[in-house]
Image 1 (cartoon, rainbow, N blue to C red):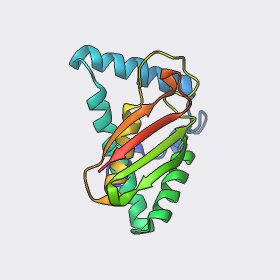
Image 2: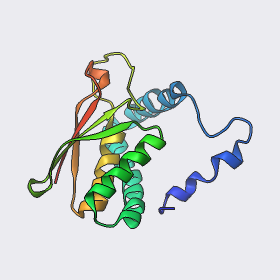
Image 3: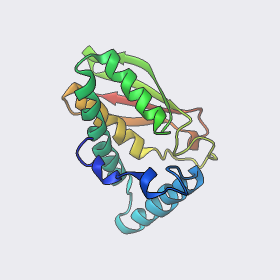
Length: 165
């Protein structure tokens, strides 16, 4: 298991009756109400903090996957997509990839954070942006900046992220 992820422990053993999963509504209440509003009230705009948290998680996961796949981009992307789906984060697809020019565009359908949410007029997937940045940095070995360009919370279909490096 990647460094940092050992803190997850064994949810199945720890929750023999309730199980490993929680409802999306609880996750969103913690993430979008508790965490976002709580942090915003303490530090102003918490999006950078949330992005950085996602980047750390993504780097851990990316390094673990890289250790399994090596530097084969196809295998790496396939393994990442499978892991993102199995964790219930969403269904990831590469829309465009131009590695030589430092650009990748990724779409996440059924995003755990916002799919099915109302149009609130702002993009909210800062954690996912950082998560993608960390994963890609593990493979590419360079700083990767990721920006969410489409979000369900803006009334757009799916979340789209632009990665530049």
